[in-house]
Image 1 (tube, rainbow, N blue to C red):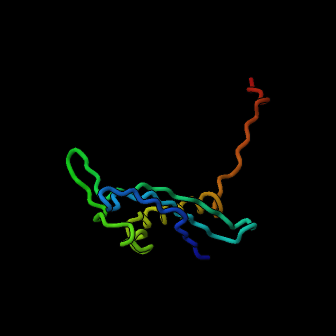
Image 2: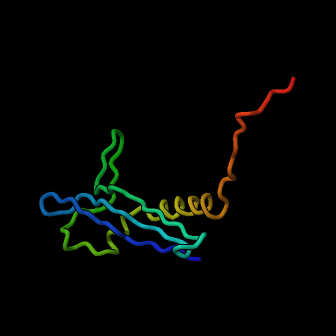
Length: 112
């Protein structure tokens, strides 16, 4: 059964006419809607062209005009591998091998 991934939100933030960050939402779906095997999750991320940390600078993408971005370009800056792994783990824990229901017995009497 395959996973369907849909980019549902892509909001650019621009400075001097160039996109310097993207806010993205990616929906993952697996299974058949309405069936026990169906699961859906949405991942969110603010992706900045440049992130400065005290000891390093991380360049995620080169700023360019909104009109120069394609859907493929946006997807290329998304952390797809990370989201794939997270979704697979969620599906495994919720659908494939859900945690067994635990019960507490507040009426338990401690033996003498």
